[in-house]
Image (cartoon, rainbow, N blue to C red; front, side, top):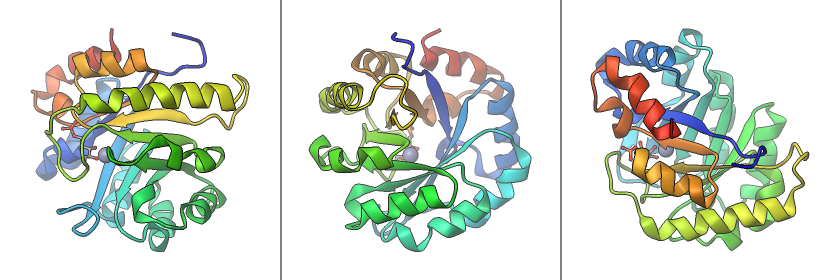
Length: 227
Ligand code: DX5
Ligand code: ZN
C-alpha cells in the first residue's frame, strides 16, 4: 500500500446495542477502533429515523475517538451547526440531499471540523469531482443507505478505483487537502480486502463488528483492517 494510503476502521454504532450505547463505545475503543461512525437518519432521505445531535453530544464526553457523523438527511445545511456543537469531528452530507453542497461543505470547514461528501450507489463519481477540493472525506456507499446489515454492492468497486485514480491525479502526495476515500455498507474482512485493493482508506462497518460478543470486537476489527 503506498504511504499516502490509510487503513482506518470506523465502527458504525447503528448496529450496537442501543440500550448499552456508552458500554458499546468503550468496548470498541478498548478493542482498538480508529473512529466511531454515527448514522443520522431522518425518515425522508432514507426510510427510517435514527440518532440526533443530542445523542452525539451525550457520547462526546465518553470517548476521545473521532466522531464521524454520516448525515442521511434532507437539507443537511440546516443541521450542521447543531452537530458541530454536539462535538462531531467530521460531518458527511449526501450530494443527493443538497443542491448547494459546495456551500455546505465550505460551511462545515468554517465550523472547524472535517467535511465529508457521500455518494449513493446510483450517483456517478463525476458529480463529486468539482467538490473534491472542499472534502476531507469522500464516502462511497457500498449499499443503498438506510439500513445496516445489507449485502455489499460489488458494482461499486470500479467507482472506488476511479476515485483513487482521480484523487491521486488531482492532489499531490504532500497535499493536506487530499480527501480520504471512505466506504460504508456490507463491509466485512472479505469485502474490505476488495475495497483495499481498489484504493479505499476508511472502512465503515456495523454488523461485522457488533454482531459478536464484546470480547470478539478486537478480532473483528483486526480482520477488517486486514491484519
Ligand atoms: C447504512 C449506514 C451504514 C450502516 C453499515 O445506511 O450508513 O453506516 O450502518 O452497516 P453494515 O456494516 O451492517 O452494512
Ligand atoms: Zn453510515
